Image: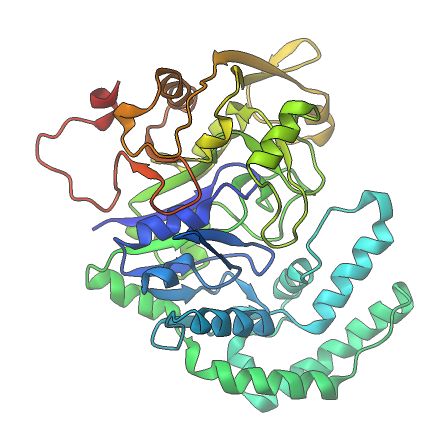
Length: 443
């Protein structure tokens, strides 16, 4: 039975939401295993745009959705999202959504600290969303965070809030010069959240295990991208959680033997939001063209995304770190009309080739991308639904991605709508005895 993890291979914003929505049609349970409302998955269904920040994309396929223990959740954002989905006629009650009892809460002081810290950094800002994600993960690691199991126990919650504020107010007032927060209003606000969310709270590790034992098909949805991982990304310009496929187990409470496939989402070019090194960034007319045609604005922050050529060094690093078994290429149609395309196939530092993705930002920032140029295509591909019908140069571009990463392409997206997709291999489809690999069939 296939259990699939979907992760981003770049710096997030690769189009994971659309691919999760596509695969969710074949899954029974969809699990989000890390991150918070700093991520956004944009889906276009019959021309209508829907953005999910916390609830897994599988909710639009009427699948059972789980918010895992690896997440940090702002209950106000979650309830707003649930209400919005309900207003669209989508079932978003406890019969469709479960929240891990050990997932951590984002509190008002987390948001206040997040914003104050960025303002104090000035020109050295990391570029956080200001949603309190980092400070919430800090409290989790410091063992002073507040979990959903605490939220639904009033006495425990009140005690933890008052204890937290003693420290947080000292930090806010004495270090940042900000106003202190009062416990009473916070406790009253979150009591309302507890009343509404208590029916959703469960031991999701047990639910996931039961589903796996019953041969239900599981789909694990990550947020952000590989190179925003707290351990393996371009630190400190990263998020505050582990974004890699391996964290699907820790962030959901599932043993690694249950996982069978890892789908790495690759935007057909590269983008990045906020600060941090970006070797293939284009600040010229082509970069502006990619940004405008690709509508490259953050679905959570609305910030303009930096755009550049595809970076195969980045992709190879992601394939290795995640154990990627298949790639899904998104936004391929954005490259329509370009006379030629560059792919970064390697880096050079001080005139010498760099074998692996550097951990040192000083080294990375001084690296030079080594490009390979491929012919572009003039045809519009948004209406194509068969790999065979794709223009020759599109196939050449895709084949080169496979060669450079050593990984087959399973899915190709040629537009934002669910229908604008070519599926070459469905990880949930049963293998036919004696069937030949798709790679050999489609050349």
